[in-house]
Amino acid sequence: MESSLHSYVKWYITARAEFCQRVYIDRSTWLKRKLMPFADWDCESVMSQEVDFSIAALSELKKRELAKHSLSLASLTLSNRSEYISDQADAFTTFASLIVVMLAFFSLTLSPWLKLVVASVAFCGLVWLLLQRIELRGKVACCKEIINLLKQYESRHA
Image (cartoon, rainbow, N blue to C red; front, side, top):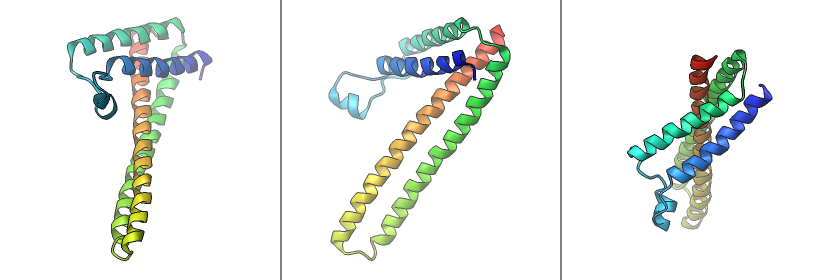
């Protein structure tokens, strides 16, 4: 991958994270900030800010003056990467389900004290697996957004 394209991907990930923090997080109360972080997705102002962000991302891509073959290869690579990451994210869901089934199975034969210990360890494992899945799904979404931008840029400029 060209270094300018690689730097664009890094720029996009950082810019998108800042944009989402600024636009989507509802900061009205501590509870909303921690438990229900996403504001109204369908609001007209959010849509116009998304459009402005997309235009800024496309203009940043245009500044880099990339070769057409680089755009196609980057789209292909990011598409393949997003499929692989998506597959890994699904595996975390499967592992979480297996932990729940194993917990149910072990709860039949263990003493109450050991049930509490096993349930605590299983709960920590479930939380870790689900956090990993959330992180990976975010990476998939970011890859797909970059792919969409590259395809849009390629269709209009290259």
